[in-house]
Every structure is written in C-alpha cells, then in structure tokens.
Length: 241
Image 1 (cartoon, rainbow, N blue to C red):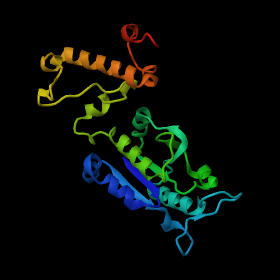
Image 2 (cartoon, rainbow, N blue to C red; image 1 turned 30 degrees about the horizontal axis):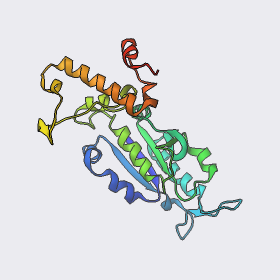
Image 3 (cartoon, rainbow, N blue to C red; image 1 turned 90 degrees about the vertical axis):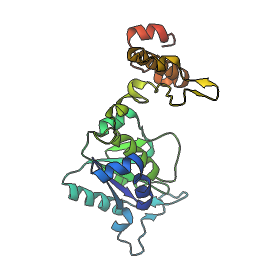
Image 4 (cartoon, rainbow, N blue to C red; image 1 turned 45 degrees about the vertical axis):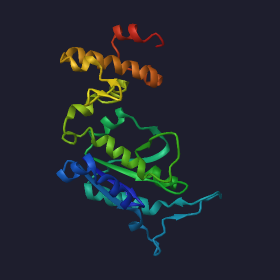
C-alpha cells in the first residue's frame, strides 16, 4: 500500500507517521508513505503557493499550478492516475467502511489544503474523492490525511500483528467494541465480569456480542439503527428500530 501526500508541511506528516504501528509497517516495507512538498513545484521564485481570492474575501487561496504539477509528478512516477482524495469538511464523512474499501487500492494520493481553500479549477482536474473526518474546521489537511493513512493501513494485511483485531474492533457491522479488561482481577473495588474468567469461549463471545449491541444502542443510536443484527437480536434489543 502506497500513500502520496501532497502538503505544504511534509515534516508534520512524516513525524506523525513514523512511530508505533504505522512506523513499524513502513520499516517492514508493508506501507510506503511519500510526502510531496507542494512548494517544490511552484514557479514563483519566492516559493509562493497562494494568492488573494477573486471576488474579495478574507484569507488566501492555494493556487492551482503548484498542486497540479505536484500531482502530475506522482502520476508520472507510478504510471497511472491513482485515486486522489482531497481532505475537506465539504466531503463525505470518512468511515470504517470507506477505510476497508480504500485499503484495496495499490496507490492513493492525499491532497492537504490550507488557508481559505484551494483553487476550484485544480480540484476539478485531479480530485476523485472529497473526504471529511468530521463537521469541524482544522487549519489544514495534514491531520485528516494522517487519520486516513492510519485507519486504511490497519486494513492492510500484515500491518497489525493479529489481523483479527482489525476486523472485530469498533464499528464492524456498525457496532461499538465491547468493554475490555486486563489484570488485576480486582481494581479499585471493581471486579472483572465473571463470564470473562469462566474459560467458556462461547459464553464469552455471546457476552461480548451483547455488550457491543447494548453499548452501541446507548452511546451511538445513529449507528445502532444501521447495525447488522439478526432478527432475534432486533426483537430483543431493537424496540426503537
């Protein structure tokens, strides 16, 4: 899996992705993350990449030419036009389903905007997907890009030590993950649920399933409405379906 991140702040992205699980996967060659500095492609001698917006208004707008040429350099390197994702609050909200789907791509280009936005003309030329990580505004697209890289990478075979953890954790089937416990058995007067100490794996699985359903219903009723439950489970838990 190869990521190409078009950004004005490559060091921010590099520092954020060189540690923990993602960093180890990069070292092993399971992932390739390239940062492409958009400033390297400007024709301006002062490395300027933004200008005032036509029509007036506050702030500056990133110019089309440096972004287009940075994108073109990646396309020429890989030999075809991969999906190009623009990180923006105006996009579709990123989800676990989207992460799994994008993990099937061999190459992805992520475009990080800044200032008051990006010249619409270059977006029309290169962008295939508009993606948001939530209904709020950040100073740039670098943090959202790192979120996408992290979430997508977890779906790539070999990145996680136990591949099952990428398939059974929160949001699979639109259900939140069940409660987790570790040693000691009693902490601060609170006991680990006895079912987890029983050694009965079937009962443990049933308990975890029930806890996932109940937790989703309580904390994320929006997800619960879309949860993948059996008819028996809907009858038992889905009175508000």
